[in-house]
Length: 359
Ligand code: TLP
Image (cartoon, rainbow, N blue to C red; front, side, top):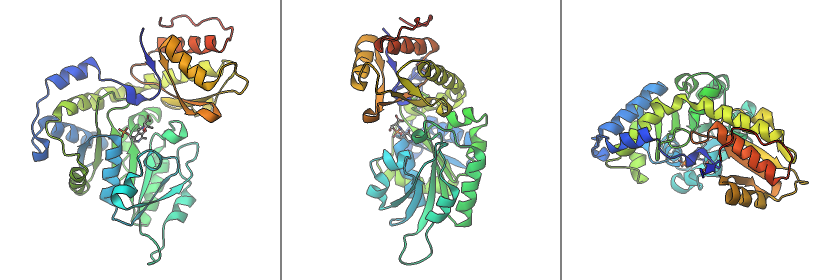
């Protein structure tokens, strides 16, 4: 039986085309700048994002950290969302390795920070205060149920950044999902940003890696930071070969994942004992809640979905009975029906099984 893993799009494994490209990739020593496949990946990313240069890094976390450390000096402050990945889930790396101080603002349900609050968070030029150096946005915003953040808003933040001589970094781990949902391209959507970190190994299916893009000067300095973080790789063209397929091919098919997320969300919303905020289903992830009167506990639901149906779902906040669901390349429409039938049967809900479900 096929495993249906809805915990994250990070669980995606490489496609057969990727495995073939990896096996045949031309490689060299990238610390000497001699890996042709990495050079091609970096140039391709730069071109797609309309930036001067790109840099292949190990992970999304390394992409964000390298970017933040490149923009800031020790003791500087950077403004970002309290629910952002950089602040919540990157092990405090900017403080740990950069001596940087985060100044956090509440993320709104649409993934934005309130512009007036950004202005208010920028420090005065006064020796008592740290120097504000950088603003970070996240697009799509994982802490806001995968909200795609539109260009008009990013332009407004970039305007504030320019007025105060700050840099703007976008954690674009899922920037192609944002561009797909907003019906635009990544070059347009990220034009106002000084740097963007883009994950290849989430919905884009590569086994490893992210790329950061920015000006030539930014990438030159980021190169040294990456080396200092242990991210100087050697014959990693074997990974970049998969990343090229991510950028060129996988980035254009994400609407299918968004459609499946909506189908699943609507099916769950129609199921007794489950609450879903359908207006918050915009890309490939959403949250749902098990109501307190449900005939099964959160932990039993999780355990039985896995043991009896090979379906893996992670509780996002077990106390609130909240789950996060993420669709991706390896979740097909019939898997959505399988999940709905399984959840309904475990809840003891007498609903006619949906046909077309996988066994
Ligand atoms: N996010 C993971 C977990 O760490 C939460 C997930 O399952 O969603 N930026 C964003 C917006 C991310 O969602 C993630 C990973 C990263 C950066 C970090 O990427 P990696 O895991 O490659 O370091």
